[in-house]
Image (cartoon, rainbow, N blue to C red; front, side):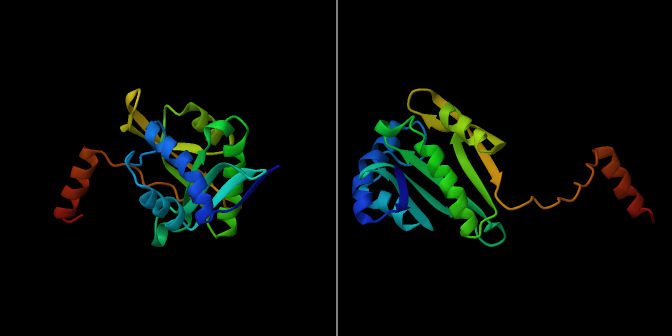
Length: 191
């Protein structure tokens, strides 16, 4: 049975080969491929609010972190990153970690989760996030330098985690240039 629990320093030591392989492949994460062990530990284990490992019978299968996506007025939205060991891919580990992270996010007071940079060519991840209810809310052209494919797009994906999405006010109607000029002219002339 796969269990998920908080990561400790010893776990990061075991996770480092997975992290290094994923980053060095330059297919999914925009981390410097030359990142050191110390820098990676700070980034993955120390800076996030939570970092967890997925393991089965003592074998590390993957890890994820959860952190605020922004501060202040945007602090209700979190961000996560997931990495799965090559040997564990196709076993549902990423799905299990994502479902676990959504519950942890809710328990931590977050109302939404946003993935800021899903490499569009990572079709397995994009399909999984969509299955789990994430919407593509943006696309950044040529934002990732893929090792094999060159410049590829990145997707911004988002999921509301709260009980019900709040009602959003209707956006103000767009005003065309002629309407703006007429409105400004009217104000100058006395309304």
